[in-house]
Amino acid sequence: MLYQLFKKAQKEGWAIGQFNFSTLEQLKGIILAAKKLSSPVILGTSENEINFLGLKETLAIVRILEQKLQFSLFLHLDHGKNLDLIKKAIDFGFDSVHFDGSLLSFKENIKLTTRIVKYAHKNKVLVEGELGFLRGESRPFKSSKVLYEIKEKDLTKPEEVEEFVKETGVDSLAIAIGNVHGTYLKMPKLDFERLTKIREKTNIFLVLHGGSGIPPKDLKKAIKLGIQKININTELRVVWKENLQKVLEKSQEVKPYKILPKVEKAIQKKVEKYIRLFGSSNRL
Image (cartoon, rainbow, N blue to C red):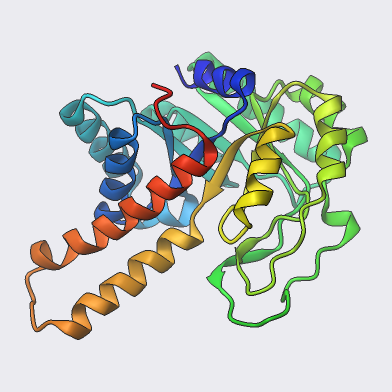
C-alpha cells in the first residue's frame, strides 16, 4: 500500500511526510494529526531512536495503535547503516528501510544497496537509497550563519542517479540539493536546478531529508519539481522539549499522564501544519 501511495503522490503532485519519533507522546501526536486530516504519514525511526526504544517494542506499539485507531501506519527505519539492524527491521515487518551509504564510494554504495534491495523485496519491504551527503545534525542552531558549509562534492550528481537507480533497484532515493540536518537562523538555499536535472534522469520517488527549517515556499517548490517524501525530525524534538519545559516550569504537577498530553497536543499541531503544507490531507 505504501508504494501505491507514493505513486499517487507522484501523479497528483503532493508529498508524504516522514515524522520521526522516540517517545510515545511524539508517536501519538503524529498519528492523531494524520488521522484527523486523513493523511498518510511515515513514522521514522533512526538507528539511535530504535536503540533507545527497542526494535520489537517500536513495531509492537505502532501495530497496536494501528489496530486500535483503524488507521494505516507505515514504519520506516531511517538512516540505516548497520546491515544487521536493517535486516532485522525487514524481518520484523517494517514497511520500508533506508540504507545510508552516503559516506561510501559510489561503487560500494551500489553494491551494498543492491544487496539490501534484494533481501527487502523478497519480504515486500521498500528500500530508500541515498546519493550525496547531508551535513549538520538534528539540533536547533541559534547562529545567524550556516555552521555547516555545503560543498559541491556533497551534492547529488545528476549524472550518477540513473546508473544508481538502474543497478540497485531502489524504490526511492534521498538526495542532497542544499538541504541539511538541523535548523538554522539562516538556512541554506535549495538547488532547484539540480533537483530538476535529477528528476529528468529518473522517475523514481525522490526524498528530501532535513525538512525542518526549510521555508514553506521552498518545500512547496521542491514538491512541484518532483519530491515525493519530506522528512521532519528536529522541529518535533524542539516542540517536545520546549513544551515539556513550559509545563514543568508553570506547574508543580508530577503526574506524567497530566503533563505529557499537552506535549502530545503541541506535536500534533506541528504535524498538522506540515501535512497541510505537503498537500497530503484527505489522501486516504
